[in-house]
Image 1 (cartoon, rainbow, N blue to C red):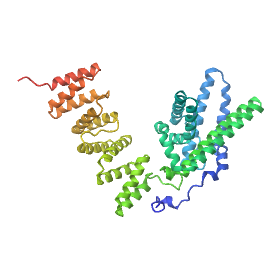
Image 2: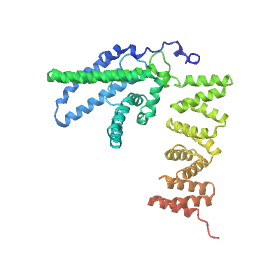
Image 3: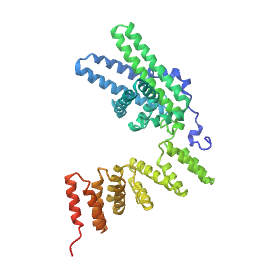
Image 4: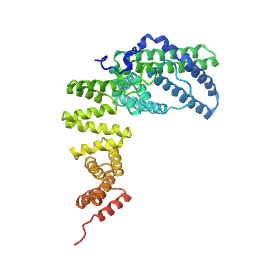
Length: 424
C-alpha cells in the first residue's frame, strides 16, 4: 500500500539512511562548512564576556540568541534533507529562541509544581518525563513554530509513537553528546589554564548544541513520512501537499467503491495530527455522506479554526452558514472566533449569518465577557435589519443585567430605547 500511493518523484528516491549509521558524521557536523565558521566566530566573540557589568550581560544575551538561532536553522535545514550546514546570514534572532525561553520557564514551573505537590518522587518523575519528551518539544518548536504544540505532551508522545524505538535510541545518542560535552568541560576546568579553559568550554558547549540539533533534524528527515512532514529542500522532494499520499489513498478507495476505508483513513489522520485543508475538505464530504452529524459538527468547528488560521474567512463563513442551517446552536471553537466570524459576516453583507452566529454565541457562552457586546450587535441587527423588535428587546435587556461596563451599558440602553414599543 505504501509503494502504491507514493508521491510521484519521491518513489524513485532512496530512503534516508538510519541516523545510527551516521554517528561519525553527526559528531563531526559542527566541524564542517558553515557550522565550523559559526563555531569559530561565536567562540571568538565570547572573548567579549570579559567586559564588566551590564556589557557582559548584553554580550551574553546576543551570543545566546545568535547561537540558538543558528542551531534552529541547523535543525530545519537538516529536516529538509540538506546534508550541509546552513549558510551564515545576518539574522541574529529567531522568534523560536524567544519561545524556547518561554518553554524553559513553563517546564521549570511544571517541575517545581510537581515537587511542591508530590515531594521528591513527584519532582523526579516530572523531571524525567520532561527530559524524555524534550527532543519532541524542540522539534515541534522548530518545525511548527508553536509554543502551544511544544508544551502539549500529546504532540511529543505522538511523535515518539510514530517514530518508535528509534526515538529512544536518538534520545540516548543525545544524552551521549551532552555527556561528552560535559566531560570535556570538566576536564578543561580541572586541567587547562584559564584562557584555554574558557575557549574549550565554549567550543564544547556549541559543538554539543549544533550536533544535537543536527541529530534532531535528521530524525525528522528520516521519519518524515511517519510524521507527515514534507522536506522542502533537495532534488528528491517536491513542494506539494504534505498529505498528498493520504489524499491519493483516500481517492483510490473512493474510486474502488470503498467509501468506509477512505473515511477511516482520513478519520485517523484528522484525529491524530494537523492535516491540510484538502484533507479537511474531503473528510467533511465523507462525514455528510455517512450522516455522522455529531462528528460533522465537531469537525466543522476544527475546520473553521484551521480556515481562520489560514486567513480563508469566506470559506469559514460558508461552513458556519451550513452548520447553522442544520443546528441553530452551532458555535466555533472559541468566543474569539465567534466575534471574528460575526465581524467578517457583517463586512461581507451577510447580516443574517452575523445575527444567527451572535445569537448562538450568546446562548453558548452567557457568562463570557463578550456577551454584552454580542448582544448589542445582535439587538441592533434584529431591530434595524429584520424588524424583530421583541426579540431584540429580550436580547438587550438580558445583556443589561450582566454588563458592568458603563460605556457599553449606555449603548445597550440607547439601543433598547430605539426598539421600545411606541405608545398607541
